[in-house]
Image (cartoon, rainbow, N blue to C red):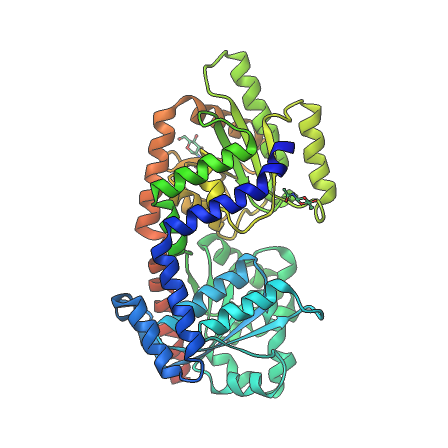
Length: 463
Ligand SMILES: *[C@@H]1O[C@H](CO)[C@@H](O)[C@H](O)[C@H]1NC(C)=O
Ligand SMILES: *[C@@H]1O[C@H](CO)[C@@H](O)[C@H](O)[C@H]1NC(C)=O
């Protein structure tokens, strides 16, 4: 671990530099768009022209082009680097790129100014998204005027009554509710009582949609509105790195060097915030068991390592201490590496050989890291739960194991399988990549979202 922390700063700088060099074309385009906005702030029509010409024929061909000149209000429960808000931002930029007028409000903002919020706000302003306060006249006026209002996450439901008050019924027919969660505490009347009357709900996976349907019915006795399943897609930026073999090699070498892992060693990683729900504890048990199996059977495999990316000793201290104690107790410190929580997952995806998605209970709502790993041609060892079952094809792009303690030994065996069958492991990775190219790209997501938006616009017009 000492090696890891001392090498980190240098590594960070080096891969950033490498990335900037290698991705100079796309980076330049990004800067171009930004500077166009900087200089044309007060001329939105010029900005639109810039965006259209910079993104080229792509914008003409965009499935979302019917949203041009439409007014869209996006309501985010918070502004942070977590999955929900980032997805909504991606939608904001997709809509901007086809010339929609996009407004953004954030419901919960911390009282003191926050660096992350400041930079996200600016990123949006730079790209022509209008950002304003969640409360007050402007929010209300925009909601009444908008062609479409997107509420992001179940929690955002509280905003309706709090801000729109007696105007709620006028806005509901043009509300699209985007839901990314399925934990019990979201099924509260406080959050979702208006759900039956909105134009539609958009949910990240079929299992999650089913769960919402039965849960709202049984618990709350309310009926879901028209519900659309929209699987997510990988961003263009991620695909660019994933498909750049030079970038990948550079990142792989640097990350491995920083962890003190050799090029020929085998790396199994979980990339999720460290918490019981993500199953890092069970994964470490499986990993230990797989090391024992290999020793018992005297199998010839490269040195194996486990990486836990998502460590945060300031948050989940008790659980993470448990993990670290287990590692000490089993004396596998030189095999297990903890890496702090990070948004930049590409270097790790480039560096590892297998992604483990060990989310427990009902699993992931979708699990974006799974399609990101597949883009990097990595096979996935995943729990047979939640969105994972809709992404990973068992035995083809990865291997599934049961959730809970029952999954420990099957996962251990699957780890050994991928360690001993090199050809199979690589083939699974390639199949995963092909699957991503077929259905999990940004443009696929844009097509799916476009179909939903069309229907919602149509419905709200006729209501
Ligand atoms: C990881 O995070 C902890 C605090 O949670 C911090 O003390 C430590 O320096 C971080 N390590 C690295 C390598 O950034
Ligand atoms: C995955 O495939 C294996 C081998 O066919 C099978 O034993 C296992 O039950 C399958 N798991 C799931 C969740 O389908």
